[in-house]
Length: 469
Image (cartoon, rainbow, N blue to C red):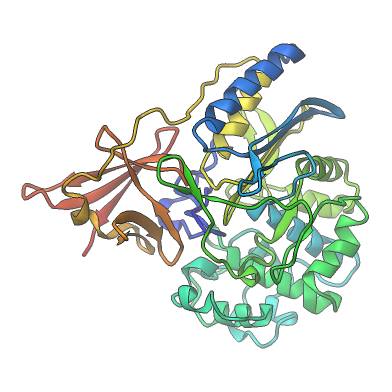
């Protein structure tokens, strides 16, 4: 587990711990570029190679990048190792876990059931899961649009404890509904992985089969997504890259354990860059959904969010896509509707580079300004003398806390009940999170006690949290 990016349009107090990482602290950066004729192929390849290599040299990216214009491949290359221990390189056939991009597969599964006449997105959850009386005012539409009010699964008070338990999907939804709603359904957009766990459960109840089996029969096979599937129960998946988390300034480690059942529906899909390109093409051409369902999928229902998919405009250009973070992996894609340009990034080191990857690669394609944000400030050889005083609890919003703790002398941060990310001390006195690719600073009072944490992401957005203990 790690931290997860989410749209910076959201209010900070509504940030919730995502599939495995700090969701939202960094945020999705809109691609602020105007469109021109793409640069020539040789120059394009050289520039993208140089750009991506700046991050591979710092050991902050390992994975595959694909850019397409309709059926034409503009760029396709893989970097780094699918398995560092055995020296197996990444390749176009390498599969990666795609985190929250999985949500749109769940959403499409729901819409397929609606097209089949087996449910309606305006139905109450209790119609299909009658044991949850507290969900009587929650509709399937609310779950799909993150407006249900259910507490995010990684903010469950007992998450760290039950993460080690052997649970069914029903037991997970039981845990979710043991908590009070965070707001009245339909009134507030607050990103919640729990909503998609509930949707996966509804798919199983309505279809009479497993979530995995339903998607395989009704989505993956019809669209010939032969390298895409749902992972569960520690199954062995051929060509699946090993996921790694950052360690120190440029090292790697195996990620903390995450119980697969907690990401069923919200982040449990794996795929390849070529399959995701086919997926984008299928959504764009309406190959699997009725016209009405496709319209629902892409409608901006609230906060630039459709059904499991981000939809917005960048300088008047309509785009759709999503990002993903899950233990040891990053994923991101964006498609420009009018220009029919797609950029897909999949990786197996969980650092916070994918969001600006897709922006900068698009800028290269359209001949606009870009720059590498690969880290350049050297690390300190030891922590500052006062670093132990930083340990404690920092409040960034009414229900959003960051905890700093020491593990074997290493300073790590976690959000709510999420997992930990190391803070690496830099020569300038700042700290650096490779997981979010962000700088962290602290303010002190006259007695040199820390009073505030200041989190600055890669595009300058600043978030402040007061120390409260």
